Image (cartoon, rainbow, N blue to C red; front, side):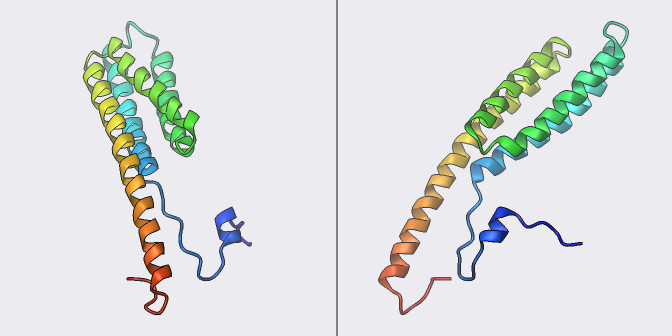
Length: 149
């Protein structure tokens, strides 16, 4: 059975430079995936400590939904609204501190990591664009030497 090609695969031609992936997107996705694991284990913690006070199905369902949302948000962080969803999820994780006080600290630490990843990733992306521009200028000015390796 033939595999469906992506848009990038269909549009590729020999000699085309490979499009650089966004460092900001990679950092944001990494933070979200790590948070999904932490939320999963925090859900188990709340289940173990508070199942007499809060309905176990509510604990487990809400924790699973939040974990899945964190993972699925990785697919949309390339969009501006995807980053807004990421910020909302950061606030939800911090609010988890009302169920388990340690989540205030964990949520705040992840929110700081999220902010740092977005800022530094954007900085690296800007530097890469500038580096690529300078490389293209050099290759245009020195066609006989070919691309620098």
